[in-house]
Amino acid sequence: MRTIVITGASDGIGAAAARRLAGEGNRVVLVGRSPEKTRALAAELDAPFHLADYAELAQVRRLAAELGDAYPRIDVLANNAGGIFGPRALTVDGFEQTFQVNHLAGYLLTNLLMDRLVESRASIIQTASAAARLFSRFDISDLNAAGRYSGRVAYGNAKLANILFTRELQTRFGDRGVSAAAFHPGVVATQFAANVPGPFRWIYHNPLASRLLTTTDEGGARLVFLTDGVPGRDWVPGAYYEHDRPTRSHRDATDADLARELWDRSAEMVALTS
Image (tube, rainbow, N blue to C red; front, top):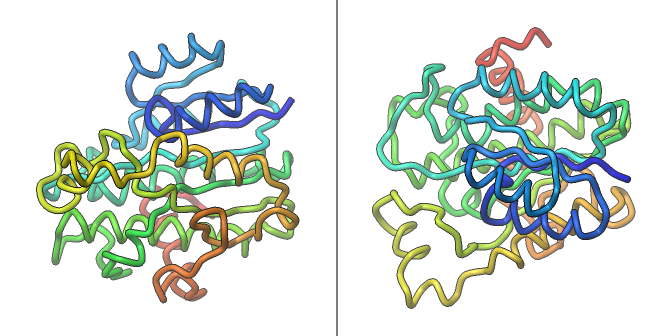
């Protein structure tokens, strides 16, 4: 039985993927921010669960310790937690919240679990987005968006960070048995962007536009495709996927120097020694 950890699992595509994977007989470990939603899904699936708010890195560190203690093997880590926000705000850790919730927290969790993931020859899956290609204006010298901010650009930048993180994960740990991939789940009909003014909110919550959105089951199936697939046979380690196919993202997504610098700056921000 495989052990599959899914963050952002209490709702949306995370919950949809969890239901499918649990139905296949996997041990699915749910990680969510909402106690009520996470407990309800855990009861439905008879699955273990953990709570963590990615806007507070102390909770991510506590989560990593819990996962390390509870599961001697982790076959898949799905870094699915994320979100888009309105006006610029800093977390209690002092980082722009879009960047922290979508990238830094998952980066920290992955690194804190790395010994276990290497031992398990795990797959590490990032839920990225086509927003990386469409909206990002990535500035490695201003990861906190102090100089210029919009919610849409901040989200695009964070999703590009997910793809760069995937590339650098594969570069650093691929020869130790870890396989990484990032994917776009589609423009999924969830409560995403409910509190964000502008085009994102219109797309996700306008009754006419919402008819064109991907369902949560379809988005979850794209996570399941990578989770169930064999790296090197069914999908390409280090690649970014849309519609279950390797796809080009933003031109910066294949910049090896940028990926390395993002890794190093992220390590400094979360106080990792290596």
